[in-house]
Amino acid sequence: MKFLFYLLPLFAGIAMSIQSGINSQLRILINHPIMAAFISFLVGTIALGVLLILSRQAIPPLSVYTTVSWYKFTGGLLGVFIVTVTLLSVKEIGAANMFVLIVTGQLITAVIMDHFAMLGMNGSPVTFQKMAGICFLVAGAYLVNKK
Image 1 (cartoon, rainbow, N blue to C red):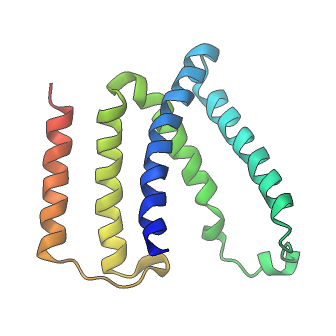
Image 2 (image 1 turned 90 degrees about the vertical axis):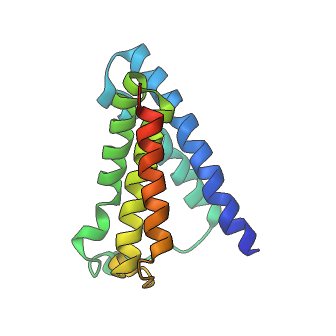
């Protein structure tokens, strides 16, 4: 079963690449990056609403939400940033260039978050092996983006 937790992120990466291409095409057709991002999130929100209804899980009472720290509601804002950046970047620099930079930023941030156990992550110290992996990824990002 743990294998699934390794396979799903791989599929999410595949989906992100396909999503950026689809959203880029939408942006070109309607000639408006923010509207394209809005449509993407609207369709996603509708899909989540359907999943929420089909899941038949009890929805927490409003009192639960008042105990949540404000910053824990900002994930959607980060999603808006990510989708809008991909909409603006993918056509200009290509999918491979854009995603190698995204993955580089993700890995560097993830290693820092793990090292300092930020945002509920389990502590996992930075090792030479992790630093070497980051260096190879940064070198790879350079090579992929080099003209």
